[in-house]
Length: 263
Length: 197
Image (cartoon, rainbow over all chains, first blue to last red; front, side, top):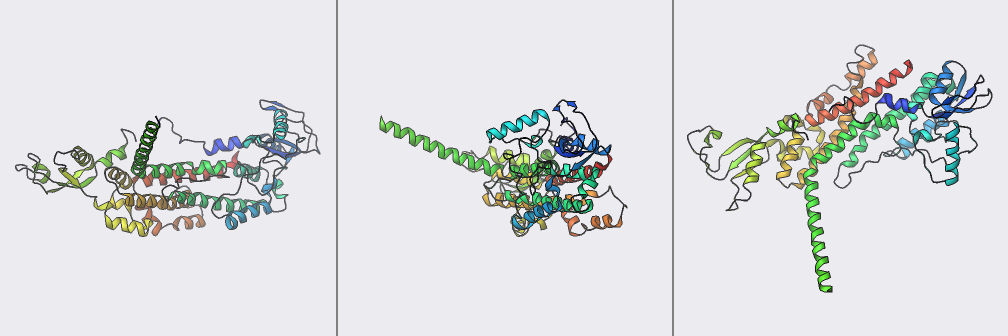
């Protein structure tokens, strides 16, 4: 009651977190490595591609010191493939999140400490890192999969590095159009996913593959629906529990009598 | 549910048709006959908080006969349930009771109506996705008034059936609408504001 904000992150907070994602830049000027709280950034040498956090990449882009290489999943053909998959092949579920980067290139230069982490999980093979620690928005990311922060990264790249996105082969407007379609398709799925709660027993909603921004948008609604279902079904649920408990007690009694017989 | 939850207080005040099974002296004023005892068989509309107490208090009567029985209010009656089964979206729940789901949940604690529970759950879920649809459509309403003809057009698009549906939402559904609407609205605001940073 005291907090004016609803539970969960707001859109601005999600967008802020998304700025920690690594993106690939093609520098135009030399820049020595900078010491940041998250570790050192790799030094920039003009023709070589380097992974930088999104916020730094956008800053350099605005100063015309670097170009951003958009992630492969932002390619129009990848986007239309995802749309096709979302509408035709799996019209009820969200498309899969990107596979864990087990086969990611270990020599890929990242921020120093993170780079070592990647080496480790390549060795272990079973460490699955979550959103900001996976290179899901760099130029090495797999095409055809939407990472956790897809909408935020795509929108900020379109807003601030539209010319770089256009270098993929389609105009920024076209990419934006595809993104809008994707947002609409997935929003419609989010709405209809509540219908999975319709019958008793099937009280699960699968939100696998949903992005952070979509979660921020639908959190209030989805929680409201689940809470409403809980309230309307509370008495039935209580009755069912009682029944189960009684049955459990019966079983216990049976068990005891069995033991007694054994003695 | 908090003690100060205004919706739960208002749900408590909803009237339930009750029938007295025994003569009760000094309760005649409930039936506008203050001088006479309340006769058995009188039907009185009692608020939920009172009806609940009377029904529970008498289930352990010596004769095994509760002195108040209650029926489902017309809003939860057979007609409405049949209509809900046919198409949950077509029933204006607000006309049945402004606190439809709250009332239904409270009554189901007293009654054991499996079928009603199933119908209600289906109703809620089906209407919820309809609510989300409308909440998203009106996302720009009020913000972009007179901005462009196209936007005006898409706002006008929800008139007619959509407005009727939204008018028929009960209180908890309105809250849900508000949540869905807020989410869609802040998403839109973020999307528009991204250029500025």
